[in-house]
Image 1 (cartoon, one colour):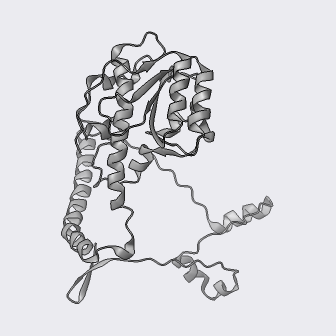
Image 2 (cartoon, rainbow, N blue to C red):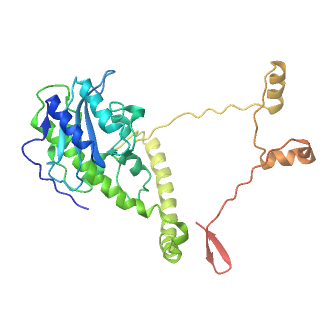
Length: 314
């Protein structure tokens, strides 16, 4: 999928409370909306919602169907939006990183919210091969980002807003809608019914990449060890691409008899279960029959590749 934006003029930017309420009322009849917010003072303890951007048409690549509502220091307007849109279960609300936007738009009251960030987290890397799953990154994989996309961290508490800021606010829901559609096209590859899978095709693909994967895994591990050793030997903590860090792992151990004695002397209750390893079971011998054991059985499935009479693990 490749998308190209042609931003509309004039800017769909609204500041009058009554006009914003009329538009909110119109959006209240929609089935799905793609939403974003811009926040002033977001790095402080008292962030303020500045803009609410709304798109109701995923086919729009111009931003013509986007409404940018200026709600800075207008809590009544925000409350009206929450009441008519956010708590309405009939409207699906799509955000990227919804958890952040919901801090300003209804919190736990909001219903029927979809988060494209959470969708992207469920997709394995080979289906979404990107360095990260930020909206900007996924959107950039679908088309060229306009220069105004860098306005995300600008000052959203200052008025008047610059044209570049408004262009950014305008295009964000457009990209959100395209990213949402793109992710939904990928999801069916994950949510297939195992009973209807093409087992022959799956097996052939597995065999095609299994040996290559094993070779790459061993090479990566070997390269990591060599790089770490080389950086330590050459007293290099980082280069253009890699950074070497270390931490101390402290493990505390005590003889079990000593622990039991201390617990008895302090009248401590050690009434939590412990897993009996194979070594402990062997040491206990027949005494294990005297213990009130709780057993859990887990079935572990192992996939192997047959090679004549032998089985090769991958």
